[in-house]
Image (cartoon, rainbow, N blue to C red):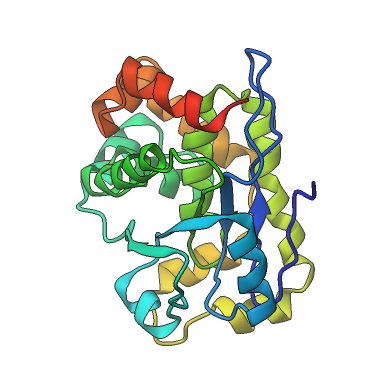
Length: 249
């Protein structure tokens, strides 16, 4: 099955099925999708997603973005508004105390994942992942570019399922294929009246340091990724086992 799904009207839409875990299992196909903007999906693309089994759409964009580029309502999936921003400042304080000499995106990612508001948003994401427990039903999570807010979500769920760090990093860096047509990306993703920081993030290519800085910050403040899942999102060992039953073959 293709990793990159070139559905008309979608940006950076990708299948997460097929990735191997360190335990020798693999993520189920037709269960998890990550994406950028999907507000312009064509009828043909929507029909594909209906056959795919899409039931949950998790929208990480801001309220302004959601109102300006509204996801299409259908009779087969439900949209869950789950804005990652604005942060409350706690994450930025912790990140700066850890190491201020990070990549631009890495500093932002650390801030989000250490911030209580950011954690609350990703907790809802994990709650919905746990709800997605029926056969032939799938969940799509997205933002605007499908790189930063979505990228962090993908890092979290892939790591939780036991995918190795190298594979997680390669999945994150796949986003850079989207930047081959920068003019189209700029026209689609830059909101001249929107948040300048989000615009800059959307137009900044993914880099290796962004992922490694996330793992470093989590280990620094929580000791392990498992403790982070438990403390930030309430994912204890029982819920983690359920998550793996749902998404792994």
